[in-house]
Image 1 (cartoon, helix red, strand yellow):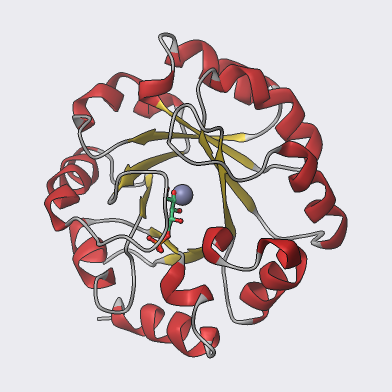
Image 2 (cartoon, rainbow, N blue to C red):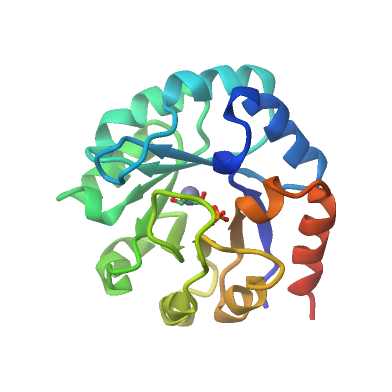
Length: 217
Ligand code: DX5
Ligand code: ZN
């Protein structure tokens, strides 16, 4: 196993108390925050954009902000999101005709780069770009909503990436909990997003501790 980092997704928390909820996750042992941006076009749902992220950054100074951009035209929000305080910009390979250009622009804006694949997208689609990115996100649910079931059938994608790239950050997102984390960790994922399992719990520290202990040998 690789050492796993846990990044709570605050999508299913009380979004009117975003800063408090984020701080609650960090106080519970979160290694980073996974922020789900949806535009109502790339996915059939909406959340928040860079103005909200900028306000959150005023209150949460030091946490790593992993921006999961479920948006069409991902190039459009790179500058605003960098200005808002995003640390990593993860765009979907399905959302652009020119991934190489998006990668270049993200780097120019000073952020780390993630590239994501939806469940129906073959992982081979990102192979041409892996050497140029910091992280690949393998979705383990259809993006758009929290609280869905983990798709174990995505694990061969994680394995295929891990076989080729030993030191790549590989993130999984969707349905991760103490019950499913081992499947992802054994396949080679090392960045674990967990939404409802953590934020819906009254004892998030316990859930995060359990998830971390699950992946220890
Ligand atoms: C889904 C989002 C995920 C999701 C995770 O579109 O990208 O980050 O909120 O939530 P859970 O862990 O509840 O599946
Ligand atoms: Zn996400």
